[in-house]
Length: 141
Image (cartoon, rainbow, N blue to C red; front, side, top):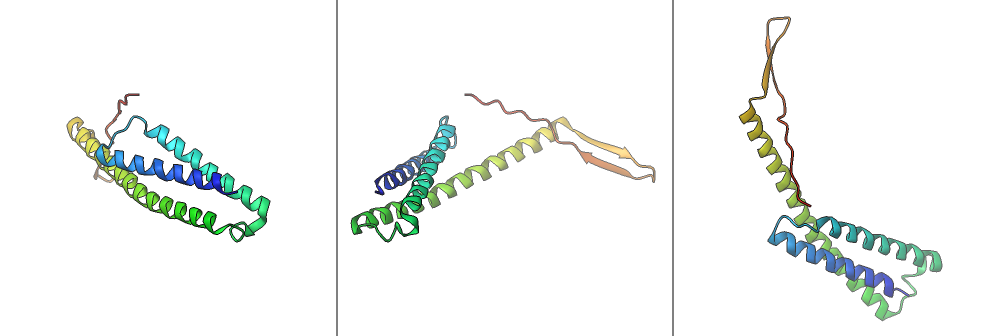
C-alpha cells in the first residue's frame, strides 16, 4: 500500500545526498538543472501518493498501517528530513556565495567603468548617481 510512497522518499533522499556531496566538492555542476527537475518530480510523486492514500483511506491511513510498513515510512521520513536539512544548507550557502561574487564583480566593473554621474540641481546642489555597470554572464551549456 505505501511501497510507492516509501520508494519515492528513498529516491528523493538519495538524490539530495548525491547533490549535496557533489556541491561540496565543486560549486558548478552542469546537471544541476536536471537534478532540480528530478527533485521536483519526486516531490510531486510523494504528494500525489499521500493524496491518493488520503482519498482511498480517508485520514486514517497512517493508523491502518502494519508495524513493518509504519517503521519503513518512519525511517524513510527521518532520512528524507535529514537529507533535506543538509541539502538546504549547502544550496543556501551556494546562493549566498553566488550573490557575493556577483556583487563583487558588479562593484569592480563599476569602479573600472567609472559610471558615476553627477547632476547639478536647481537649488545649486550636486547629486551623485551610481549607475550599475552592465554585466553579462556567459554560461556554457
